[in-house]
Length: 285
Image (cartoon, rainbow, N blue to C red; front, side, top):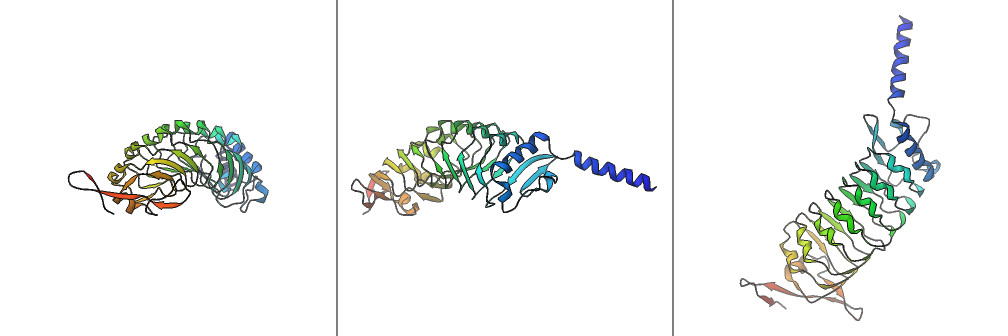
């Protein structure tokens, strides 16, 4: 009887060991650990233990589906091998000291729904290949040193609900494809070097609840049609180079009442107008 019990225990242990993640996925995790100075993480991994016991790693049916390592003292770069985690849905490395470029291989992660690399020291461009990760719902890269332009291909992320790129060094115009993100609810591009006009096509973002373009270099007229966006709850367009008149309702919605920087570098509030019943613009100064 004792032999049978021992045999059963051995079989159970063997099954558990066999049920761990694939070698490919485990190697990708080890690469991440080594590339970000895992020995000095706040919560470390015991590489001799099953992956299921590693801090911040979630498995489902022996596949890595989630990595949550915010504020865990990751220092170093993201290895390109991270894309071998083909079943990953969430990658959250918020508030660490990760430097270098965003790996272009992240676009190969077709299951990825949430990517948060915010509050690190990333530099370089947002790789256009990232837009191949078409399952993305949340993309947060704020508080880094990212340069270049927003990829023109970003319109491929049809499921995207949150795009947060604020406090970087992004330049150029907002790509027209951004206005094709019909599921977008949060768009935060403030404190960059974004220039050009705010297209009237912004009203295509019918689900948008929060829009912040604060502290950029945008010019021209603020579209009056913004006030028709019924789901828009928070707006900040101030500290740009917008000029002309602005809707009174939009001015009320803006956190700083549409305070702009004029050609002399001074902060001035845009004059506002209201719409009367005959659809004529009438000053309400």
